[in-house]
Length: 216
Image (cartoon, rainbow, N blue to C red; front, top):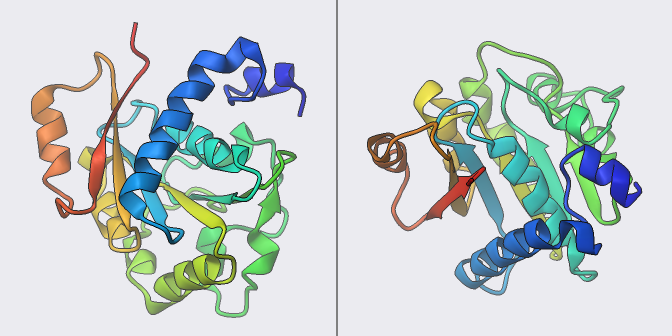
C-alpha cells in the first residue's frame, strides 16, 4: 500500500507524515518486548468499552512489530460481534476466518492466513458476525491453533484483537490464550472506575498496561 492509502485506513507507516503515530506504536512495541522476554509472545488487545479504539490499536501494533525486518506479525480478529480487521486491512476473506476454523475440524489453518499487502503482516479475519463465541475460545482446538501459529515461526508475534471487556465475557476468556494483555481506554469514553473494573478481569502478571486512545 502507498503511504496515502495507509493513512486513509488509519495505518501507520515509516514516512514523516505519520511519524508521531508510528513512534507511539514503536514505543508500545518496545515496552511489550521488554515484558515478553526473548521469545515471541501473544498479545491480547482489548478495549475497556466498545468504541474505545481497540481494533485500531491492535492493527497498528501489528504493523509496529513488522517494522523490524527480522520480525513478522499475525493479527487475529477475535471480536465475533464487531469484526472489522478484514475491512480495515482490505482483505477479502474468501476462505473463511477464525470462527470457521474453530467450528470446522476439516478447515485448514494455512488457508485462513491472508496477506495484507504490508510486508511481514498477515491477518486471520474473524469470518463473520457471531453472537456466541466463548465456547470456541475455550476449546482445545483454539489452544492448539495458538501454539501452532507461534511455534511454527519463532520470529512471529501474534496480536489478538478482542471484544470490549465490559460488554463481553470473551475478553477474559481470550486472555487465557495470551501472554500479555493491553487495555485500550478511549479518551472521554470511559471512566477510571470502568478501567479498574476492566483490569480486574485479568491476571495481574499478564496485564501489560493501559493505552489511552484518541487523546486531544
